Amino acid sequence: MEQLRIYAAAARCASFSEAARRLYISHSTVSRAVSALEEELGVSLLERGNRVLGLTAAGETLLREAEALLAAAEAAAARVRAAEGEDKA
Image 1 (tube, rainbow, N blue to C red):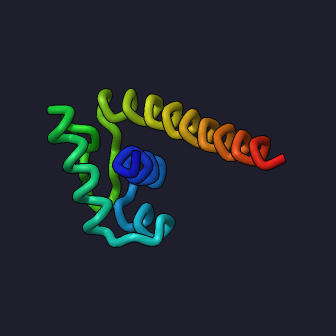
Image 2 (cartoon, rainbow, N blue to C red):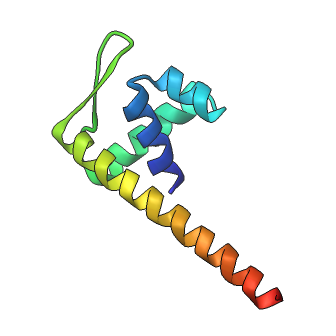
């Protein structure tokens, strides 16, 4: 999930540096996470230019999927925390 979270931030910011700043992590951590996803999936996700990132078609698809997965994971975590509270009541 962490790689998807980092990728989504980089894609939305169109910048590794800006994503790193917003996530309070290093530029190299962002770069490594995106590269690892690209290697795992066997596709290029980003078009790297002069300080600006563009999304490939695969990158656009992954961003939509990642945002849905991250939202679902957050909702699931909230339900689990709520269930814990119900057990204590």
